[in-house]
Image 1: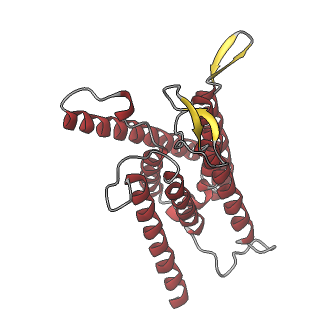
Image 2: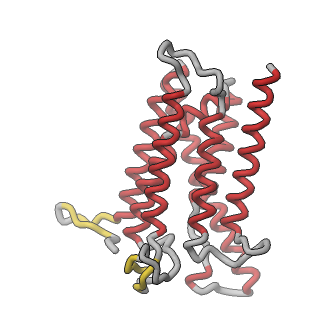
Image 3: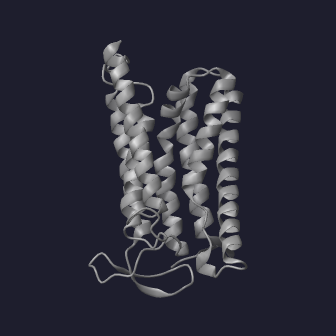
Length: 259
């Protein structure tokens, strides 16, 4: 597509540029919102840096482990299309785990912190997916559907494909606006919280919406062989995330009603 652009005689990788821009946007939103906690700025900055570092480390480590296991099972080198690419899912898992640990360390309300930080995540993902489109990764299945766009895979083979990168970008942007709207409606004009809102609501809503998007995008991508019935790993992980988030949502609401 457009893997690089030239600015002032400098070749810039579009994928990396979009990833960096998305990360900057997500961190900026999280930073501004986390300042509402009234914690020292240095602690907020350190927490964000540690969370990003943990997410990146987890993503890389998970990718290396998966590819190492696949290579072990194959008894040697894998073909180029047999390697697992980096996945934002592992970055989210690692980042959230680090976030919990940091909140415990600082004795901060975990769910409140997550709700403040989560709003920037889908915006960052939306921008990052534009980079995927430019790089040709995370490509869709070949199709004759009207949604099909003539596009390459990451090996440079051009066919009419589902533009899953752009669909994901639009969906992530939609999730961002849904969370923003719900967050705005969660508070009255005097700043007090609505009776139906609770700590963790925004985070659980994000998990359910992101997982649902991930499940349906998997239908349009070559996302691996089925592992359980017709479902592959991408879909199974999405269903597990939706189920767990829905269970926590119901449990929290029940606790509020009993209270």
